[in-house]
Structure formats: C-alpha cells, structure tokens
Image (tube, rainbow, N blue to C red; front, side, top):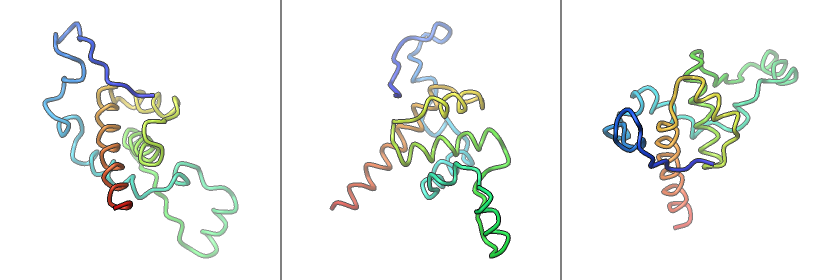
Length: 128
C-alpha cells in the first residue's frame, strides 16, 4: 500500500514529497512515455511466454515482445502496468524491483498519483 509520507528529510529540511519541483521533473520524458504506453499493456505482458506461446509465435508469426532491453525502464514499465490495472494495490516484489532499479519512493508516489488520476478520468468517461 502506498501512502504520502510528509515527514521531514534530515538533509533537505523540506518535506520528502516536495523534493521535485513538479511531477514532470520526477521522470525523464522517455520514462513518462513508458508510463503512458503501459496503459495499453495487459497483465500477460509481465509473464515470460511459455513453450506453447513461443511455438505458436514461431509457426504463425506475431507475438509482440513488450519487454524493454533496459532493466531500469523495464522495472518502471512493469510497475506502471500493475498500477494501471490494480491501482495502489501493488505487490511488494514490484515495489522492491522499482527501488532496486534506482527509483525513489517519492517517484513511486508520483507515478501512482498520476496513474490514479488517469484511471479516474477514464472511469468517468466510461460511466458518463
């Protein structure tokens, strides 16, 4: 479960959630694009293809590999896919992989807030 940590950072004397000037500064443009594109990826894109799927792709062609070559960006994509589908209910393993890739908890809060807002606006359009 994610939460907004408003405790003071000892080194900066500003709230931890305010370390970035804006949400746009938290990620590079390429990273924001990956977060946006992850909305279209299904949860199946997080699994490695099985023998049957590989055989079918070999026989019939196709089979889109959505995995990214850069492990840092792949960790971001995986977390974003989970967030687009499940909101704030993320597995601990995804959060650990996100942090191990070099991202901070502040960035996690920002990406979850942005995705949550996108999910809410999508749901309003669907039910309007």
